[in-house]
Amino acid sequence: MSGALPIPPAEPAAQETLDRIQRRSLVIGALGVLALIVGAVLDREQFFRSYLVGYMLWVGVTLGCLAILMLQHLSGGRWGLAIRRTLEAGSRNLKLMALLFLPVLLGMGKLYPWVNPGDDPILLHKAAYMNPKMFVARAIFYFVVWGTLAWLLSRWSGQQDQEPERDLRLRLRGGSAAGLLLYAATVTLASIDWVMSLDPHWSSTIYGMLFMAGQCLSALCLAVGMVALLARFQPLKQAVHPEVFHDLGKLVLTFVILWAYFSFSQLLIIWSGNLPEETSWYLNRWSGGWEAVGLLLVIFHFALPFALLLSRNLKRAARRLALLAGIILVMRAVDLFWLIEPNFAANHAHLRPSWMDLAAPIALGGIWMAAFLRELKQRPVLPLHDPELTLATSDHAAD
Figure 1 (cartoon, rainbow, N blue to C red):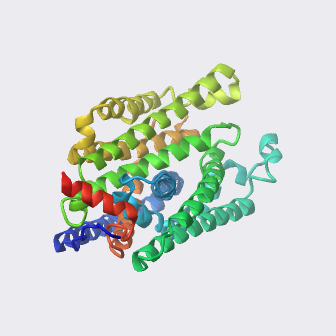
Figure 2: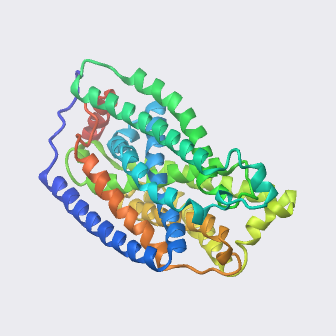
Figure 3: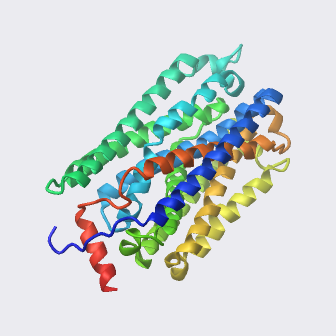
């Protein structure tokens, strides 16, 4: 790579910061798990409901990392250099998420009405697809597909680090092109299996796209936070400049708008159709306190981020952008709570939040972050020998 500026080694302070966050995440995760065990003893049904909310949040971050990683390999751009290792480390947490899916399998009978269809003609009609054996088989298939994609992309990226004479960009692009198609198909099916089938009498053709937009947004928020944290240290300090944060801010704004577009489109289509079996899904979320949660999402998941991200100065300010990304990530948990909890009969009439609805995302988040940081520390924070890296460091040096 002629003309490349030397990349300085990682500062010990960066390693110490990551180690400290990892230890704290592990402690938070362990305490959260203990709290959930107590919750499972006290109220088993609520435990499984809250666990599903927390699980969908963090499996969404994991899959979002995989999707944005593939999108970056296809599109190129120097914005991806700063976050690629974060995305790769996040996608490698699929092994952990496959393990953490076991409580969802154990709670199938408490979560999904189609497990015990009784005499319900609609459930009996769907029994060939919605049954425990097929549910488990499809889940295994999803994790195999996702895990294979994450493994291949990480493996090829690692080879690029070790073998500077090999240009693996075409392989990464080809794998990402096919992988995005597989991602779209499997995430659509998984969102139907794991969330939409909580109310098997209701359906939405845009449901999978809503989840894909939310997952990508979650991953971008994580990536912004990690870059803002590590940009204080070498080597990111040399490669990351305000223009990178500006690009990341524009991407966050794009997916905020995309999530809002899919959400509003679903509402508009269903409300225009005016079919009782479809509009009832929204009616359950517009009364008994649930309308306040919906309003919270409108303001803090869309309106406020949209307004703030129009500012060029905010998008170029690492700390302010990271703070906004943190708010959006919290609202992702609120959105999943709004999607999942009203499906259960006890919550149809009135909003009854449980302390486990807060404990589950925190507990799983602590475990996820500890595993993620362990993966992140295994490789250089910048992808070595990438042609874009020369341009990024040269331009920053010129600035």
